[in-house]
Image 1 (tube, one colour):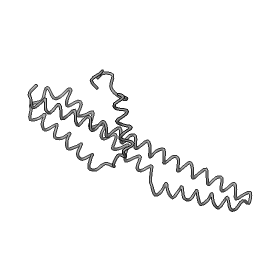
Image 2 (spheres, rainbow, N blue to C red):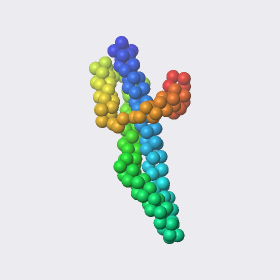
Image 3 (cartoon, helix red, strand yellow):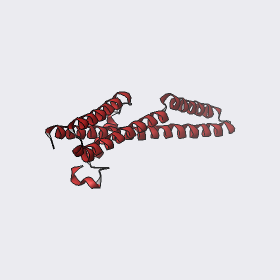
Image 4 (tube, rainbow, N blue to C red):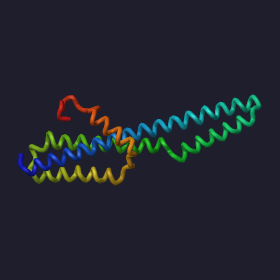
Length: 166
């Protein structure tokens, strides 16, 4: 392998690593927003139900307080839009996973058969895709990144085909 192709392979590995961390971070964030969505939705339904029950037994102060709490939870769900945020992070995670997979195939399968210039062009395309995802995607909170890093370091989700090299 030429020195240039070896450098391209190393840069592919960097893109794969970036994409893996970003994908897992986005998937962790998606799961967090999904939990918030469920908690707010179920919470508001339960509180509203109890408020209605309290109204029937003429416990008006408790019914009113619970109704305000239910309205607050529903308003919070609308304001935070956890379902939309989860969807955005899930979509970003899938895009990063796709980039990681395409870059791995470039490095492990296609690179030996490409001339240096075509290999450089394919690397540039992958690099531009990573940059576009970094610029346009939602940010990953630190807790989600740290959990992703911990999972990756523990080799969770590693391919058996890669053995100890993953």
